[in-house]
Image 1 (tube, one colour):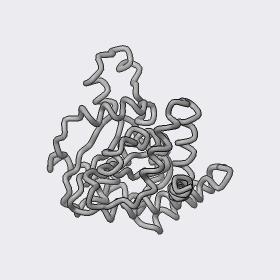
Image 2 (cartoon, rainbow, N blue to C red; image 1 turned 120 degrees about the vertical axis):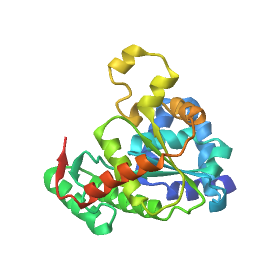
Image 3 (spheres, one colour; image 1 turned 180 degrees about the vertical axis):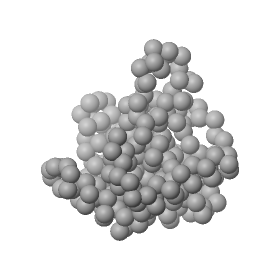
Image 4 (cartoon, rainbow, N blue to C red; image 1 turned 60 degrees about the vertical axis):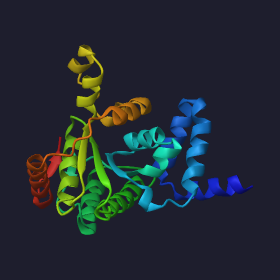
Length: 243
């Protein structure tokens, strides 16, 4: 009965997108059921923020769900925190999306142009506000790792997040899944096919493998400043991205 109550508490804390991602992963692979149960029970315990060593920022529910599954190991569950930034930054206005007003303006724009059922935009807007608030409140002692790939959405996201972190003194790392995939695997044909086109195409096992074999060097100050400046320009621009 105690375990059932813990599971209920953990499931209640999940966002709708996280719950859907976990359900999909479980349906795809029945062997993952026990691991998912273990992960949920771990999440039911109150996390001590002092044990978190690295905050991972990932763009999109699909890679976010896969990364959470990759970190279901008890040690990772304690030391790693994941912030999922929803949406697609290659479409729609980006001005002031680091503020509540900017986020609301962006989703009003999307609502006027796209028909999305089941309150999808409302949920996504709420999740984005929560994600941006979490990014702003990352403590100074925690490392920050931003997951990206060679596509407009994630490259824009990288720049926007670096702009939001402008005043932070944390060490920041960038893991490019396209670059690392082709550093760790010699598969020229896949490189020619531009695989992976997004972090969401990378398997849970490969995400964990990438993280464990990632050369952990903080983003150089000059590059960080340059990308941050590009992000600040995006936050001030009235241009509506449509790619």
